[in-house]
Amino acid sequence: MLPSSLQAVLEKAADRLKDQPHLLETFQNAFVSTIDTTWKQLPDGESFVITGDIPAMWLRDSSAQVRHYLPFVKEDEELRKLIEGLIARQMRCILLDPYANAFNEEANGNRWCEDRTQHLQMVWERKYEVDSLCYPVQLSYLYWKESGSSAIFTPSFHRAMDTVVETFRTEQRHFERSPYRFIRPEENCNGLEQETLQNDGMGMPVNYTGMTWSGFRPSDDACTFGYLIPSNMFAVVILGYLAEMAEAGFGDQLLRDKALRLRHEIDYGIRHYAIWRHPVYGPIYAYETDGFGNYTLMDDANVPSLLSIPYLGYRSAEDPIYQNTRRFILSKENPYYYEGTVARGIGSPHTPENYIWHIALSMQGLTASTRQEAEEMIGLILSTDAGCARMHEGFDVNDPSQFTRPWFAWANSLFAELVYKTYLAD
Image (cartoon, rainbow, N blue to C red; front, side, top):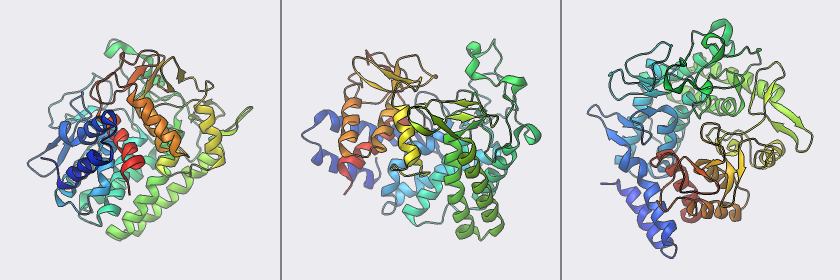
């Protein structure tokens, strides 16, 4: 049975959207997708949330999958307990291995692939991604602010927050200090180039910039250059959150100060190393850099992305450099922006050419400057769901019946958030 607050949202939607039956059905499916199909409450009170059609919990996905439930936690004790259980599980995962991105429910040794890296039995995959540490901090902070509850501020939470800061600090000087290595052998898991790190598992060389290094993107594809700009922007935001929680939750002035100093160093690096002067669009944010003057100019459908900068809270939607960047990434100048006979939007090197993602379309709506654009994105999403009334990962811009991942809870949650914000929020 759904928590009462979520049931009330469905009843509200049934009234408000009754004249748009396809929208209503899709919202209903998307809104409850995480809690109905991916959530398991464990005997110890922790929550384990799988990503959908893969039986593992990603730190990133599990956080993003529940964000649309946060506005309802204040008045719903049952929902609070569920999310507190998820946060507790995430903190345990971070303390177990801050370099892992996805975890098993039990220490059973299940994994996506036999990789050459330090692999624990609880770890499903060990691709180090900055956003994997950012998302649980964001979830914790937003939950704390919405609920007013300090129940999450346990000793394990405190240690996990310190681990996040220390990991980011270590990866500011990846080649000098990091223990992390990752190689996916060619004979395993198709041996795709984007599935492994070059240079004996260390990645290509980087210069010190103040930013923190990431081995992989939120797509789980390897970074071309080690400083992934959207993830560093996300780190700037959550380090501010972390500093506030350290002071209010634990009175830990040292952790607060370390977080704020690191926040300044990463932001300084973004401002001085991450901006590319485009001949058409003017100053834009690059997607990646190595600090030596090399850049990746693109955007990816997965979040954090350049498109999601206002959603993350790094800059406002009106910020001039963001607006320049938005025009660039929503054009054919972005190598992963595709246009077809049915749809146009941002895809990913993670999926086939000419496949765009429902996540990117939802994010375009959530960061839109006008209601008209948000409604256009909702309409485009509804027309490309292949009659499933659910979200997918990527779909063909000329034939939406060709798609990847029929059960992808993160995409459902993001669409539900967009619809709620556009039609149901009072």
